[in-house]
Image 1 (cartoon, rainbow, N blue to C red):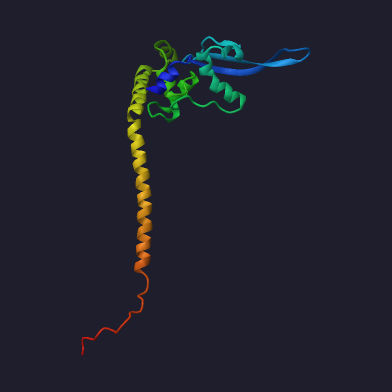
Image 2: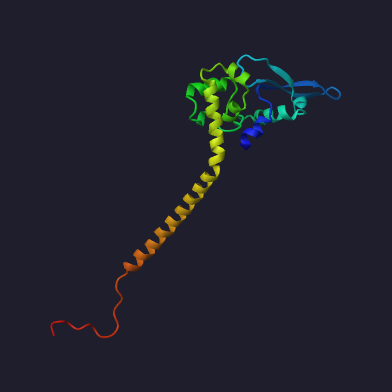
Length: 193
């Protein structure tokens, strides 16, 4: 389960906001300094932590978790979901997905990597069963990935063969629909003679 293992190494945090302040620079100039406030994933009213982005970059785990959000904020776009989006996963209802996203859990991987304490803080009935389904879903995706790849290749080959068959049938139809060329030699004898 490579995707789960990769995200498990990151800090389990979610940024609430980024902003830029200005500090004294050289001379009379002010230099921009980016800041971030984050909370642990799974908490609704958890402790917020605020720090300079430059300091957070020194911590690989925290920076790995915050970097996509920071880059999205800098480029004024929405941050990508890290993993399989909850909205696309059939293992939760729309209401459960909404509650999880309010708790900063945006992907199935985020849910799987939540600790037991974080799961309890989410406050969603049946969260342990949802967590178990999420884990099974990711394991199934990893184990069925080679089969899915082979099926996709077979579908592509089938599509190509279908196109080639249609082209061959069109050529055959064209060849059989040509008017008969005049025959050479003597005409055939009539049976009446």
